[in-house]
Image (cartoon, rainbow, N blue to C red):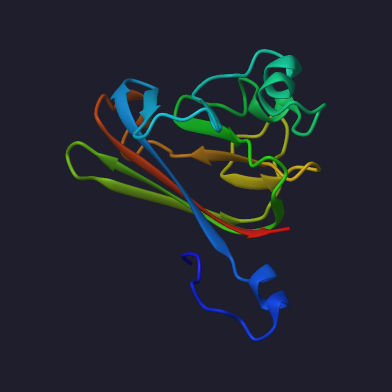
Length: 163
């Protein structure tokens, strides 16, 4: 799903070709990760987001994603969440594939389609906000025991279509 370098006979076809956003994080400690390439476009969390203002300030919008979708119940010990500031470029999302590679080469994959985020629910989900930004949650489960990992890599692939 990489960007196409084709010149389309009909320019409307470019509006339906899914693009791939790949976010990569290095696990640096128990429930701690940092972007492989440092950026300010994504906000990740392994615990509850304390207030709505945290999300609103990050995106520069008002209540695009409800912070209760990232509360203590939603963000269990083996879960992570993220918000991606796409500057309102997203028209539609197609799917998410999240992969965790532990240092011992155990691979865990979770995937979902555009399901939306549910408040106070531990889940693997992907959502498109009203202003064209993205949010996701991944419930890794206990294989491997995610909250005990101190090394490894997380890869989040999100298919999206631009406006």
